Amino acid sequence: MATIYRTAQRMAHESPVIFWSLAIGFAGPIMVLTVPPIRKTFGYKQAERIPTTFPVPNRPRRAVSGYEDP
Image (cartoon, rainbow, N blue to C red; front, side):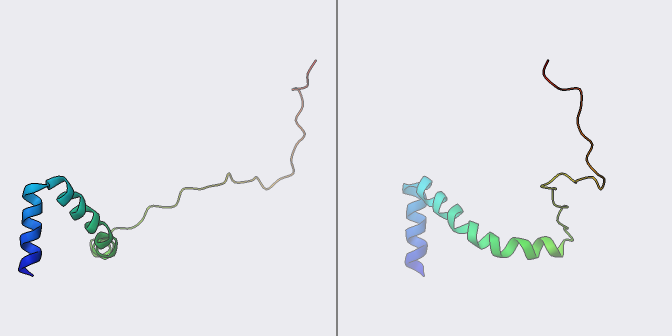
């Protein structure tokens, strides 16, 4: 365990870009598992889904007139 800490500490000092990119990269999958239960405990409710289709009227279609070419 101490070697992991020392390696991480050395990497943070010598190449901070690689260290932080790995830290953020490993945090992503962990957050996928931990954030939804935390949001649920705070009472977060998901927004209503956005409609993907236009509602079709419940009546017969009328013929379009007045747009014919001369």
